[in-house]
Length: 361
Ligand code: TRP
Image 1 (cartoon, rainbow, N blue to C red):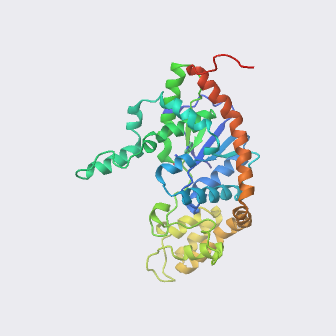
Image 2: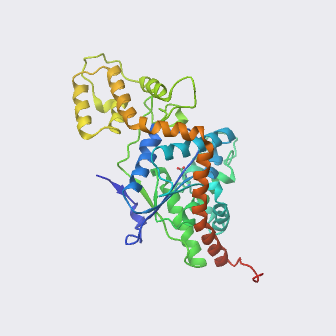
Image 3: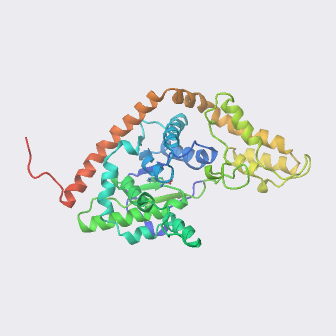
């Protein structure tokens, strides 16, 4: 059963209309199991079983806010695009594009900047967190290291969303504030000029598991504790072996084989749950109680994940080896996206008084 919520103060007024779902993925790392379970798999599934319109995009202009390494931006754009397609995203069904291929988005962001109070941005969590860290140190400017990109991040995100009049925006909990800000900015514009932008609702899926990483902390590239989904580009070790090796590194307690173990205190079991059926989970609980050895528990986890992921590997490798095919897919997505964005930007410009003085033949 799904347990999706839109925050209370965001009663969507679009319930009778078709949904337009939109979400962005920042290309600043190689996809890992946490990304797969938390974002990729649920997004693809939610689209397959519905007739909603969907816009998924690589938020590369958001990526450069926190990542100054051009090779990482480039490589992870390629790996993330290949991952989504390999995992079953249908680029004919979904508008799948790269943010930077739609120049109308940053143009709209500028227009929205002029309908966004600076004070609203002062309250953004990411900005406040950066200032708090600086304030704790002596003799450091509160804004040290804060770029205008970081400060205005929610405005670019509002442009991503409002450009396509998205109604539903699936995001992690940390992003809900940004959707509220997009509503706020849209409201200011609509009130000041004309009602052009749909107010979007955040969709937070409470059923989506947050995976634990190899060291017991949340799985995250910032902790270097991830299990890669398809493996790092490394021709010496096959992607399957890389995954096996990573799983064998999951930290456990020092209980011996045959000692009964608590499944609810085990990262191995927690990840297993994200891939197994209810019956398989119950079965594995019994094996923990009966004292399964950690090595066997890890092997069972690997087998389970590998069953699901192995069929996608060949397609991933093929796309990674053939950037031309990927680029064509992204350009097709950009064409589709721009059919909307050109019109929407034109409307926004006209609303604020920017239009040709006369028609020239
Ligand atoms: N900020 C989002 C993140 O860090 C990525 C993102 C950019 C996004 N633009 C978006 C998500 C628009 C939803 C809608 O995860």
